[in-house]
Length: 228
Image (cartoon, rainbow, N blue to C red):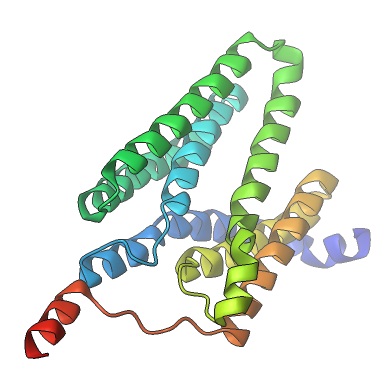
């Protein structure tokens, strides 16, 4: 890693800036899913997990930013929190399972509150590393969550329901942070993003093997029924 770090060192500031830009850009990837929801007039084929996960990650990283006293991290995750709230409102407006969505949102809020309470109660000397590990574990869970339906994906030979924009942007983001971690010679950041990049790459490969089937909007279905 030292040899590669020496090669990348002259580009350290550029790599860091690009990593920050693509991270902010990733937060807007939910717009594509919301556009799909709007076009088809329902949440069919679009799961709530990317939005709920994004909400929890924004809350946790916002708290982590306060722990580190990092203004940039606080500002970026405040934007992420606001965007994910908007995404959830759009999802709630179009879903037919509003009670279930309320329950899932409540659970996500409870988990966030519990972890924030832990961070406030933990020893200030230990909280940075321990809370950072919790965030990393949760991040791995979110990135790998689309693979939980791998059996169905293989069975149906379709990646419908997998959030392609989020997975694609996640691949770019983790790759840039991997490069940045190498320039810093930070083993923790490097290992964290190697795992995340591999998970994203595996999911991208599924879109090549099992392309998602074209979606039919609810409006189109209604017109088709009238014609029949």
